[in-house]
Amino acid sequence: MNLVQTNKYNAADDIRSNPEALKAIGDKTWKIYGPPGTGKTWTLLNIIKYGIGKKHIVPEYIGYCSYTRAAAKEGIDRVLEKFKGIYKEDSFECFKTIHSLCLSRTRDSSLEIMDEYKHIPAFQYLEKGEQVELEIGKDEDNRPVIKNYPIQLYEKARNCKIGLKEAYDADTSYQKTKSWRDLVDIVNNWVKFKEGMFMDFTDMVEDFLIKDHSFKLDYFIVDEAQDLTPLQWDFVYLMAMKADKVFIAGDDDQAIHEWNGASVEEFLKFPGRKKVLRQSRRLPKEVLKFSTNITKLIKTREPKDFISTGSKGYVNTNNYRLNHINFNEHQEDSWMVLARTKTELIELRSDAKEMGLFFKNSAGYPSVNSTHWKAIHIWNRLMKDESVGINDVSLVYDFIKDIKHGWRKTNNKRWAGVARQEFNYTYLNIHCGLQQEKGSWTTALEIDITNKNYISRLIDKGIKMDSIPKITVDKIHQVKGKEADHVVVYEKCPQISTLRDKSTKERDAELRVWYVAVTRAKKGLHIIQPNKPHGHYMPLTAIGYGRFNNA
Image 1 (cartoon, rainbow, N blue to C red):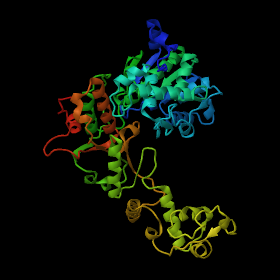
Image 2: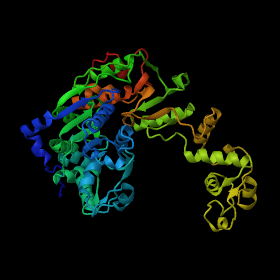
Image 3: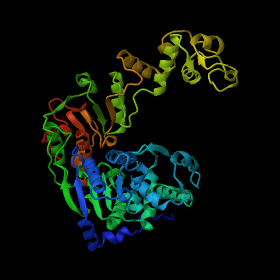
Image 4: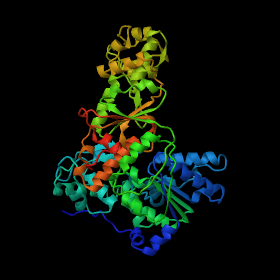
């Protein structure tokens, strides 16, 4: 069992163990604690604008590291607004995620960047012939990631800088189905598969650290620092050591990625002077009060007080189902409906469709498949004897029941002989295999009954294809950093009910998730409690009202 190494020495280890080095970093570092809605990213960008405008720092010597590519791009865009016409986007070459910045300094042209969709099919069998179960998921940047327990645990061990066996013994998740021996076999085969050919995201950081590719910056800035892993913190230590000024921003109470190796303890212990942003531009009084009672139960945290927007707001805990909430009451406002788990998210989205709500996920994708919308729109145009293009014909033909054999695909020989660019119903019926009689799209198009009924309800409400949903339905972990006027939190899962049975670390992690959920609200908060016994508080409500004493 030739076990791969997961805890490799790098240059940051010397800094971490050197009191003088830590003091040197602390003397030039500001740690900015930004509770929800207090504008920590806005503060960081103002620091950048001041550095460029007043201190005449060249953008190339400012490093701005964020948790996601989208956030890094937003940073560039907002700074460019201030210096429009003076600088171009490529001037901000160090505005990146940590992975991207490491890669830009260490890129080995002989190694291909791991693309899970492209390369994983090649890794289907172990040497002994056992099939490897691999599922491709998405990370915060919508990039493909491997969802396979042994490989995920291996990556977590690397990011936490611990041994694989230590990570395995400490893991209590439901996914722990592999024996230790089988897990090691899979991991070893995975490492062999990658060796000399591919580089994954963890490889990018490790390579940067082992070879010490750190470089000098005037300003080194890290946003969302509570989400960094110990390995990524090594990167921060190396870069901070050489930088003139360091700004580290985050909120330990919003550290909800510990399951993936993130270490809030690393953020709390990083040396530097502390500044707490105290004015929330998001939370009204009632929501702030409710959320503060959650943080009172978190044991490992930096104490901090901040103030509300001044408006009263509301907290409604009398809901048992989603349909008890009147979304029409504030239909011009934005809404967010949040689930703790994937199973609950499926339930919520099903309920939302039953109610005829038009919604989107956190990435902006609407609840109706765009091809369904387009097919309906095209069919309705054909029913009005309007003409459509060949691409529209191709799309709607995928959904029409009665198409003569050989005509469904527009790139075949039959279609090649059609000397026409625009098509109406009559022409398609006579010359292009369309046998479907005129009528409603509900009978003409093959769309599953659930979606057909849902779309019909939306159309009856006057919802149009190009409408932008005002309601977001997603998991709590997907909306950190976002906000809405009204937030609905679905409390059904047992995690919060069993806080007394958890370790301090597990308890803190769970409380932080719920804190993130309730602090998305700009005006009001609804708690859905489907399992609420008559006359009793569910745990989240009890915590929010300061009446939960068993945690």
